[in-house]
Length: 206
Image (cartoon, rainbow, N blue to C red; front, top):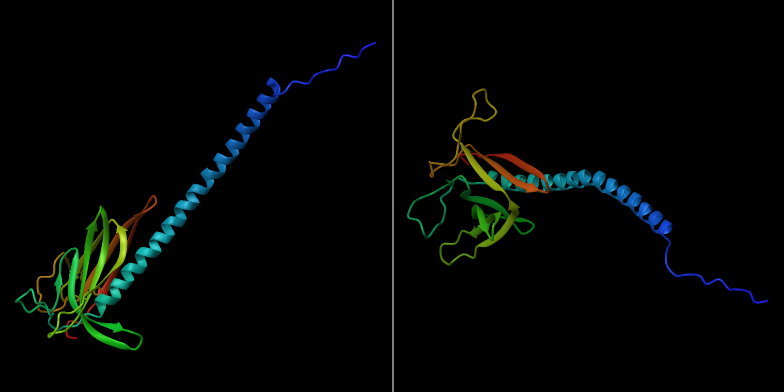
């Protein structure tokens, strides 16, 4: 008497495939839910990091502008005697900066809005004040990939006083310093529109 051997077939049955697809659908739903929960957290993190970046840049510019001095710029391309030049997107003035670890020096400073390849940045140019030889200008980027930077100028009125301050978009008295400069930096990081603003108080008689 011969026994008939049962041969197993390779592959999945329809029931097994349906169960597998149901499990995959459930796992996908769980994963999508987790991603949806973490997306706002990621946006908040990007916004917080971006705000810190903007605040640091604005604070640095405030420090540089606060160190402005009421002396004439050394500019070989200009016949005018200028102490301070200011427009909506640029500044030019002498300032005392730290050179090395324990020395300070008077330099001519330019801060300007620069656009290249569709990206807007803030550049700082630091030029030694030399009359005999051509000075070597140092240029570095304060912050890049911003939306805009804006400078405004206060003429002879205390911004903390009772009268509302009147901020000018351009400084029209180049032979003296403004009372204050307001610096506003705008950027977009992720989905967040960010702004950082600082006021640099100058001493016109310094």
